[in-house]
Length: 105
Length: 165
Image (cartoon, rainbow over all chains, first blue to last red; front, top):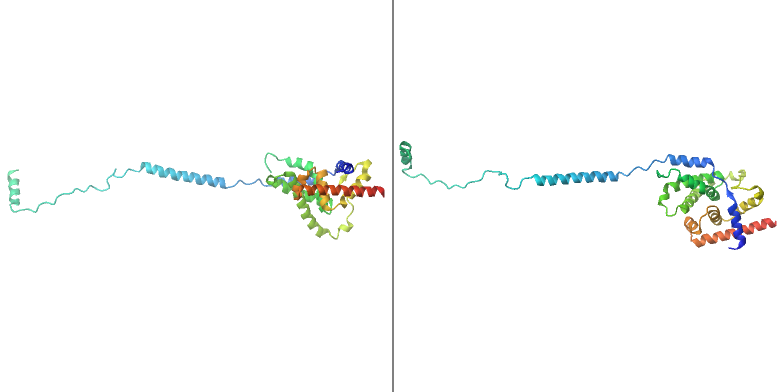
């Protein structure tokens, strides 16, 4: 730019715009004062609660696995003993048994 | 408003308020309208400035939008009143010894096309760089610089003719 324009720019810069009136400042202040503080997001709380619940469930599962007895530690049913079927009584068995009862073995 | 900067907005307003009112005056029927537009624009700026890449151009952009919106509404409402509106005080605080010259400058400033006038106000009284002006107006830096140069040339011609007459 030439000197004339620079001079004009300097002359413009020496002019002072009027100050901002107090009612404008007060208006801005009152509007900013009534601004509600930003409410914290509920998401961090939700994440915390869900993480705590997940941890508790995992702890229960682990404790259950540790405390649960191994298979076979407690018999669930009496063992089945295989026995041979008795021989059918034969003739003379009764008399032998009666003789043992009377005279001892 | 952040808790650690309760009164920082006052610093911003003290520093840029006078230039912002002058800036908003371009789209407003009265100085009071310009002040209302500055209030609206400044509040928007202060509440959202953290999202802005450059604060100062964003402040001017907010005030510009607010003034244009406000001006549109006011224009409709006051169309019939403007002819009889009483003359307002100057937008400047004139010095006693240069009152006539400064009044002539203000009158010449008001005759500038809007796109040139806003650049002059932002550059001279707002202290913005051409890059910042370009960001605020969403025009290239070279466009902001050329508008400024045209504006000063035109002002200089107007004032020369005024002095000659």
